[in-house]
Image (cartoon, rainbow, N blue to C red; front, side, top):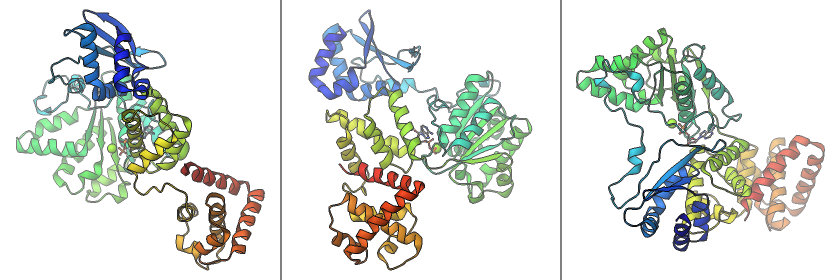
Length: 465
Ligand code: ADP
Ligand code: MG
C-alpha cells in the first residue's frame, strides 16, 4: 500500500522533495485501515503535516478508501531506534482536527486552585527537546554548561545557587536552563521543577493581586524544588513583582532549593532591580554564554540536521557556519529557510541554493568578494578602522592590516595593481607589490600569522560562488 502511495506522491511533489521528505519514511503496519508510518524525527513529522497533509490525505483515501487513516511514529533516539510510545496524528477529513494542539504539553494556566494538589503531577513547562544532549559544547559555553550540569546533578547542594546564566539574544540561555530542568526532572524523581519566564511570572502575580490570591501564588512557588526563571531583566522597574520574588527567592534558598536564572546582561548592568535582589543574584555563580566560534557553529548545524534526519552537504554546512556568525537562533532560521526553499522549489540543497537563500534573508550580504568587502572584513579582523586602511598612518598594526587587505584584493578580485592601490588611498602599484611580498614573507616566518591568513582565505573563498 505504501509503495502505491509513494508512487502517487512522487508524481505530485517532484523528485527533490520526494527524496528529502518521503524516501526516509518507512511503513510500519497496516491495521483496520490505519497505516502507520515511521518518520525520522519530530521535525519531519511537523514538516509533513504542514506541507504535505493534503497529498497524504488524498493518497490514503485513494488506497484505503474514505475510512483510511494515517498515523505517524517518530523515532526519538536514532542510535537506539527508540520510538515515541504514542502515535501523534490522524489526518482525516475533519479539518478541525489539530494534531499540533493535542500534542502540546498540557499547560498549567491556573496555579491558584492548587492547594492540596500533588505538585509533581503538574507541568514543569519544560520543552523536552532542550536537553544537554542537544546542547553542543564549545569554548563559548563551557563554563556555563558545566556549572549547569553540576547543578542538574545536585540541585540546591552545590555552591552554584543561584545559578545565573547571562548572554545576548539567541545564544542558548533558554536551552541551557531548560536542559538543567529536564535533567533534574528525568533523573531525580519527585523533584518539582518549574520553568517560568519573568514576564509570565509577573502576569501571574498581577492576576493573583487582582483576584486576592497572593497566598496561593506564593504557596505554589514555595513548593518548588528547582525554580528556573528566564530573562530576569524584565523584572526591572516592577517593584512589587520584585518584592514577592525576593520573598520566594529567600525562602527557596534557605530551604536548599535550587534557583536558576537567565538575563541578557551581567547582573551589574541590570537596570531597575533592587540592590537587595541584585546582591542575592551574586551569591552563587554567574556564567556567561558567548558568541559561538566557527567549530561550534558547524557542530550545531551537523547535530541538528542529523537529529532531523536531513542530509546537507558539508560545504553547505561550512558556508552557513561561516556566513551566519551572529547567534544560533539566526543560524537555525537560515537552515529552516534553506530546507524550505529546497523543498518548495524542488531543488537539491547545494552551495548555490544556500547562497541564494541567504541573500534573500540577510540583506547586507554582498554576493561577490570586492575590495570593499575585503577591507571591511580585514578591518574587523584586525580591529582597525576601515578609514585607516586608506589613510597615511604608519602605525605597525595598521600597516600590517593594510598589507593583508591588499594581498587579498590581489588574490580574490580581478582588480589591477593600480586599481587596488587607488582604493587604498591612492597608493601606487609598487606599494601593492611590496604588500603582497611582505605578507608572503610573514607567512613563512610566523606560524600564527599564517593560520590567521588561512582562516581569512577560507572566509573569502566561501563567499565566492
Ligand atoms: P536565548 O534564550 O539565549 O535567546 P535560546 O536558548 O532560545 O537562546 O537558543 C536559540 C536557539 O539556538 C535554540 O533553538 C537553541 O536550541 C539553539 N542553541 C543555542 N545554543 C545551542 C547549543 N550550544 N547547541 C545547540 N543548539 C543551541
Ligand atoms: Mg531565551
